[in-house]
Amino acid sequence: MVRQVPGGVLQHEVIVEAYLGSGSKGDVYGARERVRCLIDERTQQVTSPGGQTVTSGSSYITRPDHRPPPNSRVTLPDGRKTTVITIVRADGGRLPVPSNTQVFLQ
Image (cartoon, rainbow, N blue to C red; front, side):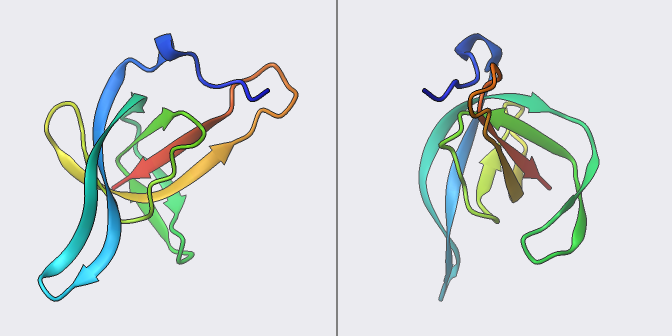
């Protein structure tokens, strides 16, 4: 049984639009999805999928099956729009800790 982050910890909500690629009129995104999460406004260095070190201005933790692709558009609770840099999945396995996904944002 996978232990997930307890719902009471997920105090915030973001709107995620999955990045689908580029079209003739610019970037293409999927439908808006509301995601309950816990936001962390800490600035930190992360490695992008391309191997570059970039600065993340914030991140959020949510359920382990949430995996938005890089460049997905995210609207934060205060209305700011940002994009996904990368995600990190933590698998608690048999340990008494919850599995989760952390999404790092620009």
